Length: 134
Image 1: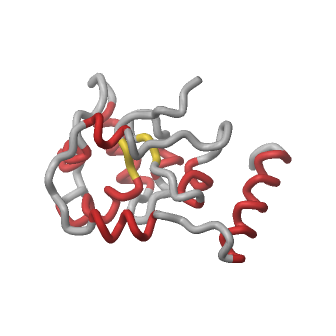
Image 2 (image 1 turned 180 degrees about the horizontal axis):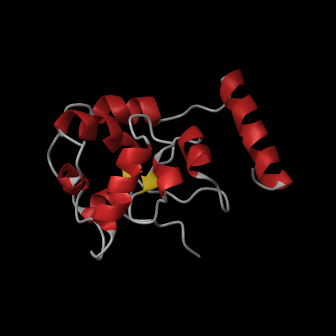
């Protein structure tokens, strides 16, 4: 469990989402990306990897409609994405080791258990570059 401040932020965000005050763009992004299997440039994807407020968890990023940076996500972060369990998360992290970073989300097709359908399902939740640095 996180600190009291993290838990408080999460509870507030959850209440806002339930109340319908905070509109998530994840559904719109998923609808736009569904069925697209073409590669995107790192520059194009990094524009969708917006910084969140402070240090937030992957689950909080998803609640805010923000994508999870593929090149820095932990196994736990990746399991927050619908369609990714512990086995796939481990495979993604292992595929990432020994390379400077993913050049395209299509590189995930090299991971055992990820085919075109699953990639289309998880693509809306991922981005290539973490622009949330200092």
